[in-house]
Length: 637
Ligand code: COA
Ligand code: AMP
Image (cartoon, rainbow, N blue to C red):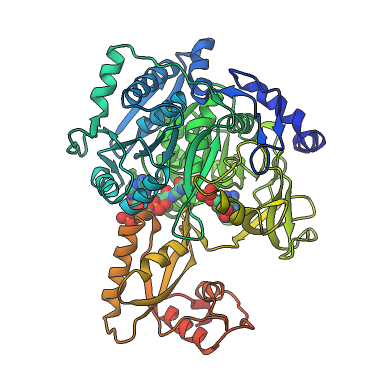
């Protein structure tokens, strides 16, 4: 029997008591007397008069409670052939030493620190060291290029940057330091200090007067037994800023607070993921994404679990059995991954033969999120693993699941294609374009009735106006998720597509608008459109269409190469932009809006209707022809 209905009903009946009880799992320096303050901030704030420290709750308190010898963090790096384990006491030593080094360089409460690191244990130490000092971290994903890093440096204005000499991808070494130097050179804001982790695979030069060798500085702090106290912060103070793709090239700085974030994540670990203190939890993501923030760093440590920091890929490290090897070696009980990872594994090992080589007896459940879970992949994983495969849906803005299936409360029956039912805290509604609720089973805009639960973003960094206009004006009284879908008669949520220009490539959230801005910056390009085209492995891949300036005559292969390089150089390899197709003109409405949705349907070989407002229907046939030449739109051929 699932306890879901009862728990959701208890939240509906009395949200304040529900969250007050959940808050008892947290150590507060000053406990909350107010659970929700509707008058604070734009739409109310959680635990508005409380004080706390997130690092204390993730690390110190477990040591104080006698669990210092228990494993806290396991770093498993097949790309460097290394494994390291840290107990909670050792994690505390590392975090204290790094916090002391940061303090020596002037970091105090409220200062911003950018973390630009590969998947190393030090990235988590750095996040926790910031939390300890009350500083606000902003982790930038390593697959972003210098230009993107530079934009984040200018927006967050960090006092300090923590980075590494390099990261390792399966086929290449990514030198982080030149990207960092380039980003700082082009940024207007200049961070005073950079703390650099030197890695054996490719050590880098340090700039005298600015760069600090992390290893040496941390060793000195340990020798001197430097242990900065946890700084008490307001529950509503920011813990971090995480930039995410919006509809323009300028990323949105999602702000997360300390108190509500801890309460929601702790609740989710116990009730959604069904983990207990001492379990090993593995989120096979990257600290640069929200999944990495919530479930590599904060969630598992808040609950006293061990977390796995994995530096590798699901395939090619050395084979498609690496996930099973890690589950076996570290006795992982719950794995959280993007469906793409499982599509990649299935492609290499369709019969799951490699699974048989490993002992998965500790493994209880697989959780999927980050993109739509296609039923085929879920069925494959279910049949091979013989364990629950739970799809759940959330966004950077929320920090934890909006809908899911709470294993800790007893899972309800899984419905393929659905990421479960709304979690307590979320009143999920499907609205038509006029903002009216639609009948069950009807497609519409998915919106969350205000107020949002703990952990959801209270604002966007430096962009209070954009916070309102991007999320709260379309449907007054609701948060617009920009996801379209439906809720069926039994309350299961289905997420079908984004309603904006965001695409999802291998579980990575990317803005096609940002790619278009880069492409049109090329001197030969008059205009362009980028759409997300269905891809069997990565879910979607960006495909660009461009029109050259009149008088320009270029080999289209050459120009395509330049545009692909430009996007890689400006946004980064993570954009996975590999295809740019020259066309005579773009299909538009009579008011000049490019018909991206129709182009995408044509490329995917889906049925499409001639848009009533189209300027010239012939252009769509030209686009279809161009796509067919490149192997797309096959069903229409
Ligand atoms: N630093 C630098 N470069 C990075 C990077 C990082 N942290 N992460 C990715 N990249 C680069 C890759 O090397 C690749 O570059 P390339 O064009 O030179 O090959 C590019 O960005 C795209 O990376 P990725 O999407 O990871 O593709 P891939 O082809 O290397 O691997 C998969 C394919 C399916 C194995 C991989 O996409 C995967 O593991 N997906 C799971 C996604 C995931 O965990 N998402 C997190 C959200 S929950
Ligand atoms: P991000 O903010 O990077 O976590 O991306 C959030 C977006 O990813 C959502 O708005 C959805 O479009 C998509 N997404 C995340 N999880 C799911 C899921 N389980 N099913 C369908 N789409 C998802």
